[in-house]
Image 1 (cartoon, rainbow, N blue to C red):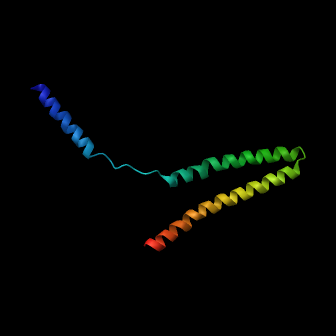
Image 2: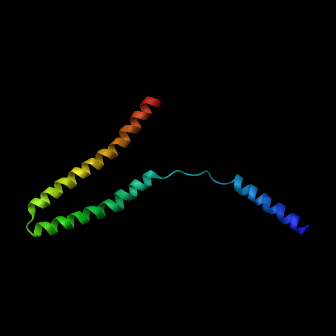
Length: 97
């Protein structure tokens, strides 16, 4: 008798937990991008700056200029990729809205 009551309570609790389970959420891509932009990117830029200053102090100005130009082009590509998200979102909303 006690086992039957416990079994019915456990079954009711399991049924309620499965019915009240929250919907699965997607990945918060905005949070990931914000975290990368606010935490990771400044650290990487600081490391690049230290490398460039170290090379410049040894007299390797041409290598510093070349590396700086490559870094600037890389940042331009990253900015262009970020812009494509907004342009793509606009085009999708324009076409399918």
